[in-house]
Amino acid sequence: MKIISRPMGTLETNCYIVYLPKGEVIIDPGMNAAEWVTKNVQNPLAILNTHGHFDHVWSNYELQKGLKIKLYTPKSDIFMLSSDPFGYGMPSSVPDIAVEGDAKFEIGGAEIEFLHFPGHTPGCSAIKIADALFSGDFIFKNSIGRTDFPYSSPEDMKKSILKFLEIREDWRVYPGHGESTSIKTEQKNLPSWLKYL
Image (cartoon, rainbow, N blue to C red):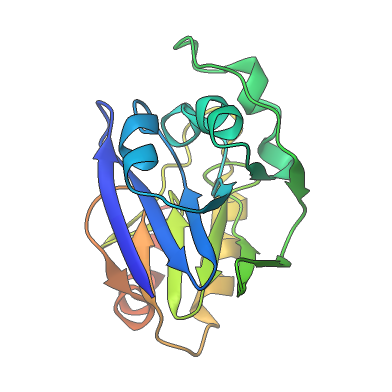
């Protein structure tokens, strides 16, 4: 499975394109992502959001309408796509699919699984495709997502970390910012974060 990425915008948010058997899915199209995405897809199938923060969803509408594809967003974060809670003038978008909790979909000949890890945001999720986990702002290399933003929850983050620690497979982890890592590597680091939340 081919995966390409590019950091977008001032926060260098990773936008991913994943090449499936029947086309491509776009994960977290942030600021100014549309041109790069459009140049690198031939049969775009869907846009997938890990959560609703502006730097991950900025180009939702432009790609949704320009490529005529469906947008999947965690249900608990949908309000952020139109309310622009950080006040950056983000273009609003409306998902076609509201993803509730842990959920599976078949897209492009592949199983797409949303795993709900709230804490950074109410709907914060990781997206599993084959042996790759796109973790958004839940897990980074050697770090976790912030829980001091509006709508964040340290208590939910604790529960999400405990849920993550139960994963037995060693998938590759592709975060919303920074370098990729792995499940087993981050499972070694995560227990130390629990005492800070």
